[in-house]
Length: 304
DNA sequence: TACCAGGAGAGCG
DNA sequence: CGCTCTCATGGT
Image: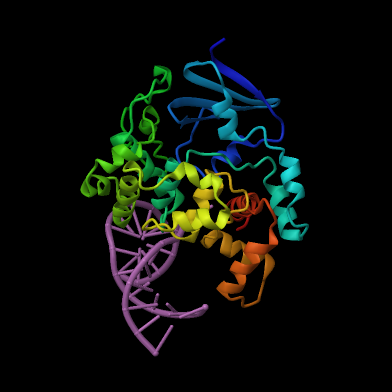
């Protein structure tokens, strides 16, 4: 039977922490729940005591796409057991109970993180929103959730500029981006990242780069493949590998994680960047990427 | 004003 | 390797 809602029964899942932890950029808070787009599906998610309630605009026969995206079938306790047993890690896990790593679409994830370099998360969300509004395909969306004001900058004051218009559109395909001009992309305020996004989209659209193949390669080979793309270095490659390609061992090191590692593991010590990279690559075990997400969210929300 | 933001890449010693 | 500079744009 096709339905427009379902209760995914699961207990150790913090929806807000997971969707707000900087691994994904399109979810918006709405009446205590979260509204977002997964593939071609408009979705509203609400945290319940016994699980996550999901509501879609169109009928759904099989909800596996959502279970896969949210990673609800992952044995979280089993993952946490593989983390190193040290004070910083214990503190991060205790502070972020129920935080999970999502399984995103590889192109949306890669494109989003190409746009992320030297940008604050708020601004990344804004850029991605504009990209979807201008180049995404219209989605089926319940009218009740549409903003009465209709625009994001019509008299919006202060820091709480919601901008939910982009939730009426899918994330644009590589083909659609590839057909755009650099100037049109720059109009989304992405600056010097525009040629990087455009080049990646053209490679993929032309069949010269296969994102879906990466998951079948060893981690180091998949990372090397991604880094052939202009504008994609270690950090952005590891984000795509962890958040979209199923590499739980990928460990993206950005300014926040570097700050966390130095402050939590090497306080009052001068550690070289090389030493830090070696530590990050060896200390956190087979699910290092999940550990990274706990440290990142812990550092951003609980410290200072 | 000056500085910085979930980086990457090139130039230099 | 390690350091520095540049890239574009918005916020404080």
